[in-house]
Image: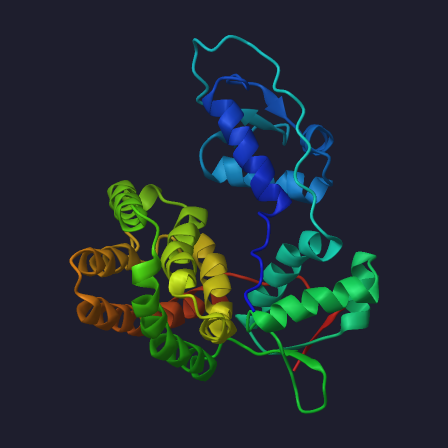
Length: 319
């Protein structure tokens, strides 16, 4: 059975709403934004408010003032000063609100080693029930990020070369089959939109951020394949989704490693072959793309191992 996709994290909803306000001139250049103000406006805690501000700063829409506050940059000078209407973001079940933070914490640690996850300590640390923690762990298991070891304890395996090889081998065996099944069921214009997005991304080159790259990866490897109509096949493909999560984390830290992200051209070639009706060629191009992606992922992991020192967490024990 297909799982409903997670709603966008609260920080993403907040950053998208603020970006729209800035683009429309609702937040004029020089206006100061604070974590507390953003948290109150959107009805969220300070943690997602802070991350939303940091995302916008990385995108060049905000700058950090000497005082530590964020200030808007680049708003149209002609925009009439108006007040943005308060917005309450779409609230999620407790486990969904917690999930992105836990996922990122585990992936950042798994780049260095394998870890045991203590479900009871996870619940206590975040002030949630064991039921909520169990739901989080279930989702992590579904996405291939954690698994039960022989003693029934949760294990987050390290993103070693052997583990990455296993996950990628699953992908290049299963994804071409799903793609072939999906093509007859794609909505009209789906491939045209993909092609346009990829061409625009290639033009932007080094200006792309990790969030955009992540969305483009999802467009092919999740959205397109999801039209295959085979729930069991998609469930199997979901097992190595730890790789997509890892890529999201790694993109944010290694944007300079390859200059223009190489997978964009590879995705574009797959789309071109699909539009031309060359299914066999598209399948071969997808396999080639995944094989090359494996090598790039290993290079990224090597690069970040000297860059990150994740904070110790009471619910993670190094194996």
